[in-house]
Image (tube, rainbow, N blue to C red; front, side):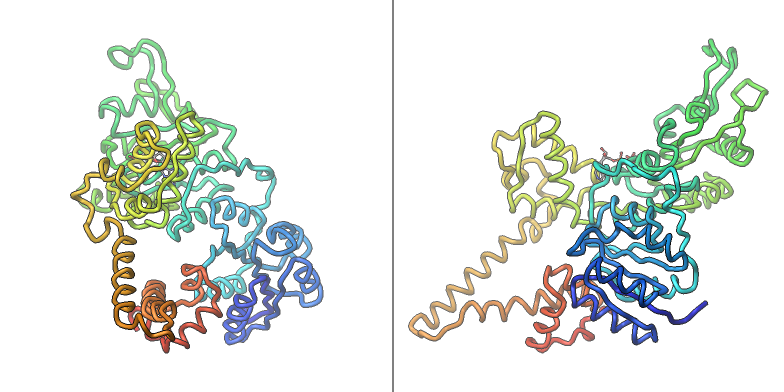
Length: 482
Ligand SMILES: Nc1ncnc2c1ncn2[C@@H]1O[C@H](COP(=O)(O)OP(=O)(O)OP(=O)(O)O)[C@@H](O)[C@H]1O
């Protein structure tokens, strides 16, 4: 493994070039920076980097365009994509172009330097751009959300599209497990073949094997004709085994045998049929616990859990709530329901709710509001009638309200003290009270990482640095655990 190399950093934000450049130079790499696609092309030829780190939104075009060509011409180059357009679409495009790594902005500097070390240690797989992947219908992708947790999900999805590895989707009810399975199928290489779903919890236990593997005429009372099971129906495509934790042990044994042999024998039959299906399983149960209790086969667990995808509950990605709420209101409008907007106080209330039913609960609520509310704008007042308000922590009911009251109080008091003084600077005085608090909170939440803090604050990193100096805040002290 090579410890150091030549790195080209392409970003039109000079602050990112400086910070990333400095960090990489400190590790002994040779670094050059570029601010556009034009400069990038020139430097790739003259500087011949080992690793290219490139932004997507560049002043003269889309930074992903041309990456596949660059890799064709420089097969030993590793490409790391940075992007603020944190959608599943970008993650998939980056993987398809043959990028070694995709890092959504704001990214963690340590993660980037680690990705560079990894890139120098291994050759990029560069197989994402293979045939069969061109022209995927990426638009209108079903998954909404830009939280770091969803970014991780998108990156994993992008990586499993060009292979047939078994996937285990984990998450509470309503977090989008089935949607993830559908996305993997409809964007992957099996998309022209069937997607068949079966929910273990929804079928009587004694019928599960017949449903999955099919049955012969006369195999049991009521079996009047030979019937293909879900495995055969999914031939060439994807079989989604939902609520796999509810599968009876005997059926688990049979399933394991099918997965090992690639052959299915119907209930009451003797002639095995070869099947070629991708397996995506999902559960809201803790399977290791079920294994300990003797209710789930460990060997089956290993077989299914080749690539785990964990969907966090919505309350752990509250930054996605408003995006999702607006998405569902828009979808309702497209379905012909009256178009509704979301007032700021309503948005705050939605963010404060803990969503025990996760995305499904939010979706149902938005649909209900689209139908029932007579106003065009949904307000907190209307939501309070729908949410079981006693469960909303009072402090969270409308955080902005508290702030508004506090500012009003503060302003009144200041005006009361010095109304006759002509030389006041109330605006600056107020900022000096609230701004350091905001900076401290945000920096602590990202472990002192200034790039991520600047991203969350929506300000340039240099501006953040200047403010920290002005307020005498030491970012090192703001790191959690330091
Ligand atoms: N990230 C998302 N973006 C848009 N819609 C979503 C998202 N996640 C979930 N949904 C929607 O929420 C509803 C519930 O999702 P889904 O059925 O995939 O959840 P699940 O985890 O499989 O639930 P269960 O365990 O109860 O079967 C669906 O209508 C789905 O379209």
